[in-house]
Image (cartoon, rainbow, N blue to C red; front, side, top):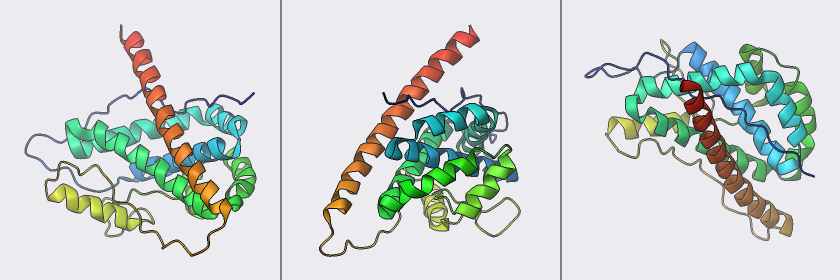
Length: 233
């Protein structure tokens, strides 16, 4: 029987610090926000591996052991988007979480069978991490994909490796686009001629994983909203 994935998300608690009317929030990542995005990238990578490689038990163990860190990262990310976008922050957050899973699923498909082979050791190392800082360092060492990029507050360099995503999004925000929350997709190489059947199967599996991940996210959000409502009463 397939193990059930445990949700690794906390009930959203909005942090104070939204921009006042007429004030533009600084488009940058604070140090704690940068760490939170890296923690989330790690969790998302492990979720993709759990769904693709049948490592649900490993994922559940990671979530159970790291729940306080994952909760803090989720709340920090929510506060970041609220700081930048005010009332539209929740929509921006959800768009980021979906894009993160999609980008990492695409990376999984490109790596083919090597992805699942590498995930056993990856999980073992992830389970040894305790603090947000340890997780952030691990993410950078392993080059875990993360589509969100903004400069660090007080710096001129982009805070993540995939800097094109952040620049494209900033252009949309500056232009006043109502679709600013949609991140630009990464450029992909043209498919080589004569791709084997394994590649086609991987692409089909990628579509299934992406849909399953989105459905899982919606179920988790609904459960957490219900839980938060009961706790508030």
